Image (cartoon, rainbow, N blue to C red; front, side, top):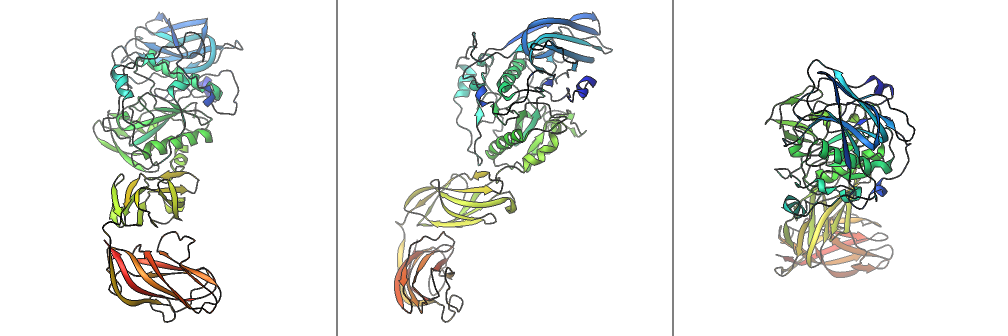
Amino acid sequence: MRGTAFAAALGVVTTLCLSGVAVAAGPGTDRAGSSASAGTGGPVEGTVRRLALESKSATEAAVSARGTERFGLMGVSWKDASAEVQGKIEARSRNAVTGVWTPWVELEPLKAGLDGVRPGARGATEPVWVGSADGAEVRVGGGSAALPAGLELDLVDPGTSGRAGAAKSAPASGARAAAAAVTPGPESTAPRPDVVSRAQWGADESLNNEGPIYLAGGRIKALFVHHTAASAPYECTDSAAIVRGLHVYHVKTNGWRDLGYNFLVDKCGTLFEGRQGGVDQPVMGAHTYGFNSESTSVAVLGDHTSAGASPAALEGISKMAAYKLGQYDADMNGTTTLTAGATQKNYAGTAFTAGQPYQFRTVSGHRDGFNTECPGHQLYPQLDTIRTSGPAARLKIGAVNEKAVEAGATVKTPGPLVVDFSTSTAASLVNSFELLVDGTPVASVTGDATRVATMLGLGSHRVQIRATAKNGKVSTSLPVTVEADVSDVKYVPVLPKRLMDTREGAGAPKAKVGPGEVVALKVAGVQGVLAYGVTSVALNVTATNPTTAGHVSVYPSGTTRTSASNLNFTAGQTIPNLVIVPVVDGKVSFYNSAGSVDLIADITGYFSK
């Protein structure tokens, strides 16, 4: 796609994303801080002033340099959306603060039909954010074909928070009322990030009376990253105004139903809600021609052809990708299959045929689906960093007490709980997993584990797995309900039989149990005990030959040991005690607190379902 020598000299490339924004040099310096404070708390009316281009010949037209009312964003449009402009469309603006005219910037025509076939839609260029300007000039020419009719220069004032004449809110009727009644979107394994809502950035909802469109399959399979080339430079406190300018231009100039992008993020990492329909919903945007029907999008404010996106912006993309893809069991470092909605080629020359399936990265750049430089030559390679920056992906509980389960299922147990889980993220990238019962961590295992266990108190419990990646990010599996119920458990007495004696090496190594050591004893399927269905066993546990005072704790194998003592002893003492202990994975464990001691265990009965 084309660029201008003037822009290149400034380190600014102007022909970037479709449904994007070009750059002109403007006032202001970078300032650290979040743009969240730029939220308006209510609708702000944006206006578009249109100046007809004067025809110079069949192939040339212009708006001569002139003063205007202040505006922040500009573009050129024409009557027939399907008509093409041959030659260059160039514009420049006058800085309202300094009075200096910017260099000429070439504007790239947008692809027709980005938001579907719409009555009254106009052909248009990408807009250019100029900050605060009070003068404009446009020239079109250099082509061999006649120019389309109705060429206009569109000057967008995005409005100012709190000013007089605030926009009307759209009536909650028809399609918008139906949108408001949409049930909550699916729960995600990743946290929902903070997002500046449309109300907060001042969306004029009276422009959006059609309501959103949701993905026909109801499932987001990929996220496309864009840049808007929104400003060079801009302050993060200007971000809400930039978003409003895009909204007004996309609706009033392009004739789209709404802002094209699903989400936007500025260089301070602040996320903005784009197209209406719900942050948690699978909303269809107008961002990646041919692939909108199975995807969502995040657009980075700014031009990232000559410089990469800020770490804060990358983090914002990462958070949104993890959240949206985590709603649909997708891995942001994985791949997916999308069906092409149009026959075309992408930036790399890969050909797509409408109706055919193609493989994409779940986090892809705009250029992967369309012939554009977007998201910029420097941001595009940063996508690999984004893909590996998320929490543990596709985290899910696969089985409870060795029975396969799906998220949302309800299973029963008499008390023991063994949870098998999985994630598509490599174990080397995960620090630990925690077992959550009713939101509280009760057991923890290392990042290479796939199983964790505990004992449940009677009643119904919400069980989840929480993973902490080595980058510190957290994901949480969708819940399974586990009901602990002993109403159908029966006790089966047996003739006392020895299961373990560390003096002789029976059931455990022939050696005293040292301080802090644990020995595991298999009880299921041994000495007449059932191999399956055993929930607890009754053991007569004896400590003998201890070298110092201490205690023994008997607990279900694989679970987190409590500080409770089942048997206390002093040096040289032999002392028994009857212990009833739940069985997990067919085993129980014995912990010695201090010194060395021999342990003996005799079975006297068991509980089974």
